[in-house]
Length: 255
Image 1 (cartoon, rainbow, N blue to C red):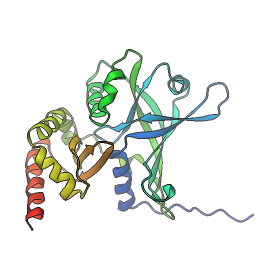
Image 2 (spheres, rainbow, N blue to C red):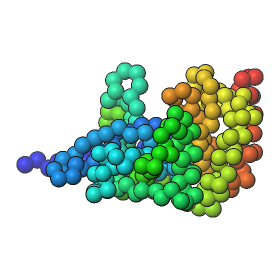
Image 3 (cartoon, rainbow, N blue to C red):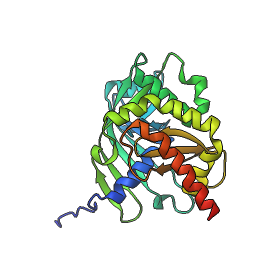
């Protein structure tokens, strides 16, 4: 029998960057879980969002089949990456192999996740606070990135998620206030971030989340990623970085 070949490429910075973009811009995913009693794999679509470190989470009702199944066996996988124009198989996607962890409602983490989720899914407010709903984080063990034909990579958590250092912890505390301030008082600058720096189509763009490596913007059903020139070293750097981004965008327009 011929020896099988490993068709995965060596993980590089391009693959890590693509995985980061997929994680940071995700809004929906296909969740695979094991059906109780049969052990058969079943899939369901869930709304999702990234936490500040990039970890993906989703809300679920205790009445849903996948919530009941995951309570018995936490193993799952989540496929993210929406197809665009042309061949759907030519667009990148990321499969996260993980175990789900329920987030308790009485902690700071839950409030942060709620804020981040609502920023991407504002209509979810009508059901998100129902008693039977909770957030579930994906404790990711590894991932498979398909960047298109001939671009397959295996990724470890360190390739995708930010370490929880002092800067990230500081940003988690101020993020909601910074996002609200920028969207309410500096909407013109936010629009320039999207259309000039990220080269997105015009729309009612708003910032939905910020982390130490960049920010995410949304308009209607679109979410895009804008990375900073260099990662932040402290939360105090966020204001001058946002000011500089606006200056850069205006300079490009003027040029």
